[in-house]
Length: 131
Image 1 (spheres, one colour):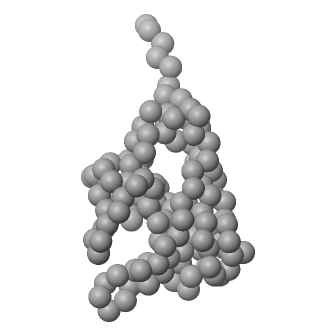
Image 2 (cartoon, rainbow, N blue to C red):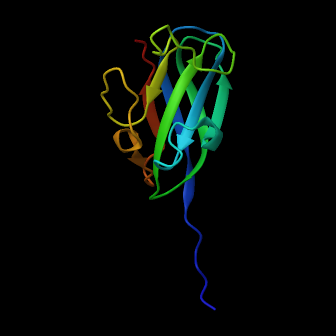
């Protein structure tokens, strides 16, 4: 029998900048493909209580090296567990995505937000935005 080494993984520290309110929770959804992207029930969710404005650090669980991921985050300022939206359906709470997606009045795709987990990737930064 041939022994197969399991895929290597390592944790990732997420630096969330532009935190304006020191209330509520910041929620991170970790996605692995188009089939689960932005489906809350299929995401691996990590939440942290916000205690200060400015920058918040979130330690994500071990991610498999070589795997593609996408991160979607929002600051649940009122702590109701949902991304609140205005009458147009646009987010009314701060949010961010991994990757370099520039979208206008639409949600990005997995392809626009994905990144590959690499051995030398220890920290990544996302800046909260508001519309």
